[in-house]
Length: 97
Image (tube, rainbow, N blue to C red; front, side):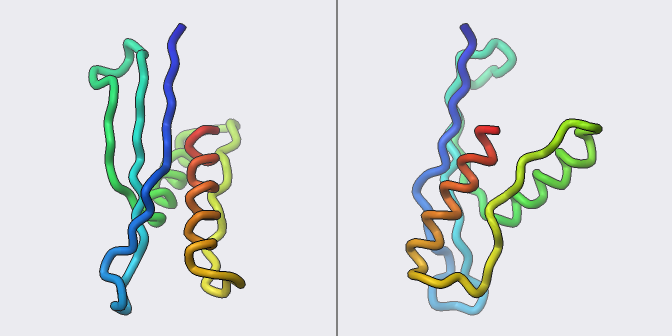
């Protein structure tokens, strides 16, 4: 049976303290599918790259619904760490769907 797992992990703030700081996430993929030559891969991606991916999926999906991304709220109430964790969970759900 083919199995593919993907994990969104290890959020890191880049350029911390700068006006152009952002968070990126480690995306880890493991599969036994014959469609993949590499059985594991790991990359770091930021939120806007997920936005780009979603747009590409929407363009090519036809009538298949594309999952939503977690919100991009500059006015999040709560700690920054809490916001980052909620976003990480939302990105994880997006990739799983």
